[in-house]
Image (cartoon, rainbow, N blue to C red; front, side, top):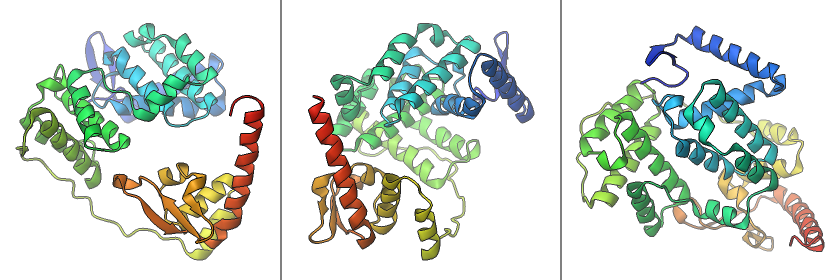
Length: 333
């Protein structure tokens, strides 16, 4: 399999690039966009933004991407909660790359509309769609996504499983997900280990997604997966920080909000998404309890509120309340 960073085109032929040649290409490209006005401090980020797009569609050359593929990626990035300047940087990086590589989609995408949307913030309709999750255009993938929502799968799981189905049928150079058969699963899983060298958990996730796809769209009770090489990377002993090291890390986080989030990750055992979704009504100061609503697997639970986080949480509530009142006064409540 060849990614955009592994090949260049001579006529209609894809020619493998050595690592040194690939890095040389990136150096030349970044120098070119630097001359066009991109700040030197942003160059590494411009490369990362493009690599994120390429990694989303492994084995597909950038010129072979469809307009809807790139716009799906942009929509996904738009739901990550990034700052407006980060979204615009992503947009600019992908547009410059597409133009420089003469990709057909670069001429088809309405960059002005995307830039206007991110400069002025998403509309209420856009926000609602992002929160609910936009259904895929392909009818088979749409049916798969709907079935997962009916079975109360999380939006993150839905997006991940759909992404694995897309990667699988493109790996086999099929026209659509409707052309996938059970015998396609094994070679794709083998490729993930032999070529991509993914972790066991990643291979299992791909397997689960593809099996769920066949069960939900084909009505199968069991899926016959052909033989494949399993990922057998040895488990490593985790590196655990001491209490003193954790305190030192927390002490050196300058932002009070981020320090509070890190404190809850460590002291309350919350996951990152659980910290981000935390609301006022989830905090029980009287009993020193944090209620986690719709955690992993849709389950809710209670977890102790660390004493060291009580005062910062109270300060954060005062800060947020003041900001809310100011928004109300300005008519944005």
